[in-house]
Image 1 (spheres, rainbow, N blue to C red):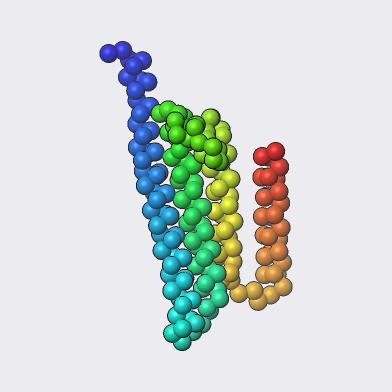
Image 2 (cartoon, rainbow, N blue to C red):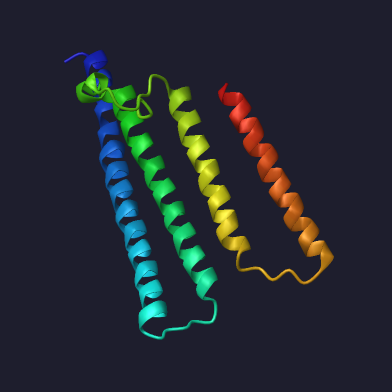
Length: 165
């Protein structure tokens, strides 16, 4: 056996990353869906079972935003899994023949990195808003910092979108 053959075959170890990223993504989809069901049960109890928690609206919005955050992370795992497979193992015949979205089509490591980075930025933004909901703004300085952070996010998203075109 030649060393080149061994070296070329060693790329198949990336199959572990593909499998476990896919499993991780599925787990995140399940957990996020459970969170949505949990919020739905809380809303049902609020309207029909006389259940009135202290911060009902914040709990509902926070639960849904948390689920969105998990869904986005699951998408990162799926994009990563598909990208690693396409780059190191081989083309996915079904994806090439599909007439649906080409979002999971990856042709280079830079393309994979860009797609994953954009979704991670969205995860961070959603996480930021989930955390900011639980803060108490007591001074004008707090509100100023909040406004500056929103402006920074908007500017960052603007430039992220500009880079895509």
